[in-house]
Length: 295
Image 1 (cartoon, rainbow, N blue to C red):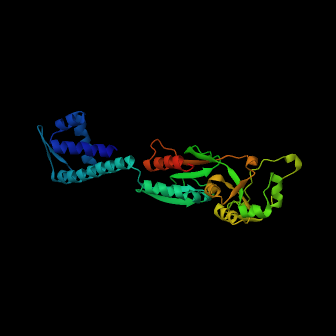
Image 2: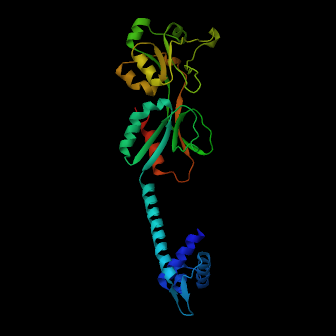
Image 3: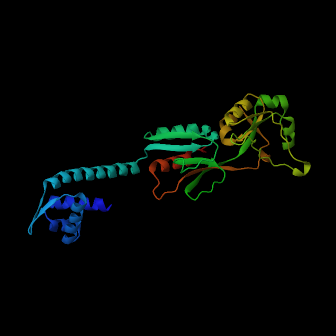
């Protein structure tokens, strides 16, 4: 920054042809201008000005250096203008990490892309806990609690689960009236791809009667196959409501035991902490909060 300051002093002195007028324009003393030019000439190893008691004259080397300095400051000004425009309008590459269930966010993300065509989306789908800063993500969407002082966080919305099956399935096997009835049903489970463990069905039941064991008829590491299998009447699945709301509304899936579901999950969006949140991240955060769980 000291070098940039010296170049600015040089440009003003060269254009005014006077250390005194340069000092007035810059708001510093004439001697400070002279000392700054002496240091610059020493560093460069050339004489930039011919000096006399009454005036200064720029040397041939100084003239060549002045043209280069003008180009440098012109580039700086252009960079500042470009940055200003970037801060005003969301644009550029936006790298986002989403859970595998986030594939079901695609209608909302597609709507975001249409609303902000100058933002280029780079989506990464994984259930592992990514390092937002080290891996270069602009934003990460996850469920559960994440504690990292380097990150900012907002809640996108809450969701609950529903146990669902098709009308055809219930016509063949009947509807369970309490959680323990599930032991006689075909249960389709979600398997966490990172650990291989089955996701627990968040059921409320009387534990004094013993542990509730659910049959493991089929499993999948993503939610989409479970939705499809349930629609086809192949069993019951416990799924986040937002992933099957359309199927329930259309009558393709029927919820059961809703009064026995005890959870309410949250989707959170996290991004690197910064005093100046870029417009592309601000736009994405705001858009997802306003549209993801809109009914």
